[in-house]
Length: 324
Ligand code: GYE
Image 1 (cartoon, helix red, strand yellow):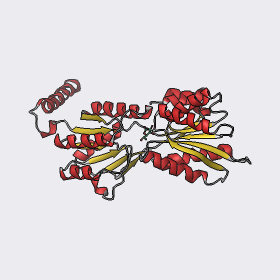
Image 2 (cartoon, rainbow, N blue to C red):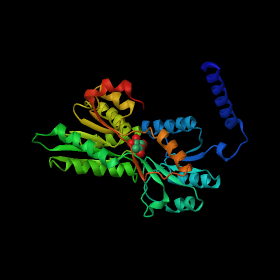
Image 3 (cartoon, rainbow, N blue to C red):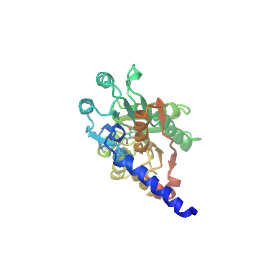
């Protein structure tokens, strides 16, 4: 027997072996894993990219996804979690709209023996055994990065730097943490002051509305900068600034967070000065975690997303590479 037919024989045996596993009787090993995912809503470009990433990654991983959109309401998320528990899903993933108020439903999941993975945002609960892992960004650090950029951009001047702030959803982890990190960073220069701060709910429409009100209230005063907790609110505010006859990115410096395509386009157009990256592409990491959990592995308590800062100067070069 020469080498070739022998190789063919081995290959045929390999195919048979695989076929046997694939077509064999449906045992426990063949059962699809079921993941219940409670999403916040569709308030921003970030969120829609996050949803797309979760759905695609579940498909790629062969995991059955039960997806529930809560339309920004915590009560809908709690209902979704209870439905997942009743359906006995293998794993629950939760992206919590606000930080508090999750104890009861998380205890119900624990009592049912269903592990919960927090994705994107953290909850505030004393009993940390209510979730097995938290994957997502370091929002305080994102706030610091935004603050440091503004410090650097305005350094050496003499006059006060008056800042307007558009906060994210009230009670949401990224809103609180991004505020905290930014304030911490700008403390380094007492000239930098937050003149007004209000929620724009992470949405473009609300960002525009609040910015209009800000500009009216600020009539006759100099506003140097806008800090928006996400790109969508910055994009809404840009419209308001233009409608008020001012040049966004020139008359008012604008720093925001996320790094969505819309922000890069605004930077290329000279209307936004910088975006701090916050990646929504958590799907593949989540599916891997689900598989690892079911294989009996212990997940790390915290998985932090790696991200960068993109000023307008690099926007044209970076835009074609952006994946969300
Ligand atoms: O920055 C914002 C979204 O939780 C990181 O939620 C997420 C934030 C994101 O609506 O655009």
